[in-house]
Image 1 (cartoon, helix red, strand yellow):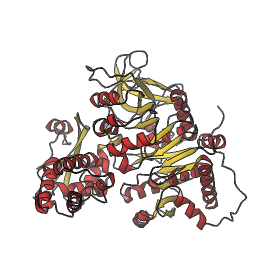
Image 2 (spheres, chains in turn brown, yellow; image 1 turned 90 degrees about the vertical axis):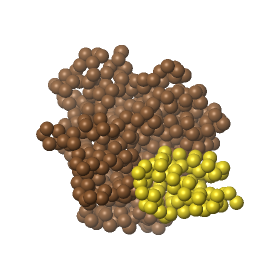
Image 3 (spheres, chains in turn brown, green; image 1 turned 120 degrees about the vertical axis):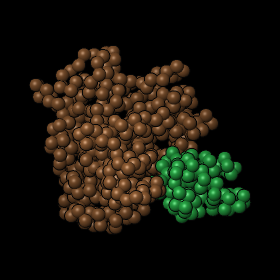
Image 4 (cartoon, one colour; image 1 turned 135 degrees about the vertical axis):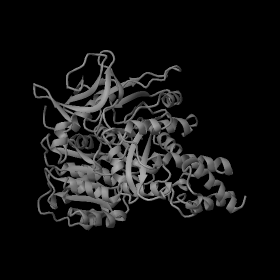
Length: 521
Length: 84
């Protein structure tokens, strides 16, 4: 396979379709392919002038905007990897991430820069920080470029040709020890996935894609890099609108989105509260969802309201991006209550199901799904041991990523999801390690013991329950605990319930008895 | 319904639905409910639907974001302005 970098497909599309609209930011503005290529090229030159090149990392602490899309392509074109973080997460967590993978430079927003820089300083991190004012429509980046010297120390530089094993981006996910861990994906990983999407979904330049997921979330790889490869238009959906079904439904109709991709939770809300019956969606042709199990009850309502599009259940951890997929044939039968399969392995990957010893199980038996192939991550940043433990290496030397998901192969390669091997849960599409929530709770001065369990819930998928014991007589109020968590954890990790006890139940070996806690819930 | 009754109705709903067992005194007029993470996105959505039904008003999108509906005081002001 020839060496190809992730951004080359976008640049080729910009040559083909210079006047087409590449990205729309509703209420803020839009940008054509030509303009996006230009803006990202000029930003790349400034990055190069600041010493950013192959093998470096650049952080993005920005809300979703045209500026952010341009910065992503600028970073890739400079030969570096981009590291997007959740702009709504606590600054200390984002500073940790930037420090952890040693970014040389961070684009941030002026409104958070002071706090963020203080956190960076506190942990001894010293990246260059570029604070952008009023991010939106690509204008903030444009204004910043104007203040920079255009006399660059080199002639108009071409894009740095990345080796396809170079990193394209690092996505941080929840870590069980309380610290997020960085999943490293190379250009080859990314391009193999993007090409698979092209093969299956056959995007065209007349398509309009949604960008519902935040950029630090792996769903964004499809949104960004598949749409911009094909000359299609990408509509950025901000966090506020993204969780409000009424506003969201209007945006989908108004911008004539044809390929939708998100976690199932928001699709469930759209089906129930989006007033979909009173709007028209003639262009919608694919509805893709991933990140968690879609409750059949809500999927049925959605398929009844949106009858035209094809529906695809995509499955895969950040470490592989999508690795299996299943087309849901509509309508959903009235008597179906079992969730749909996660489906077959994508054509650029291989899958197998193994037992605890790593031996392949017979078809029909439960086991852990392992994935090999071009899309599989390089490893976790700075964690050689965790990286090694996450792979199974077969006698031929093939690295199989152990997903931690327990599956059954039903018939000729179609997998059914059964559950997790460890303490990770999915909530609103986000990966949540219950251990990270516990680590956050232990920071509270009054918390003596903390044990977090996830219990199934028909409406929400799972509910997260924190069992706690207190150092003092009077326990902190519910409001205090929620506010404390809001300051120390990403919002999607805040427990739904806090249960205070004298002391937590223990097993015979004096460990916290999680089984009993689950039964109590 | 006067301002105090209106506020009490919203407060009761919030405590009953989202903060069961919480001491009502802790739900002060200027407690940030959305920006602090006390109410998640689904809770906020349910609260908006409750307010619209109970007070017979329609809230525009920008009126339900965390700049305009973060505290009890802001909610009451928004509703009263609508009812005029």
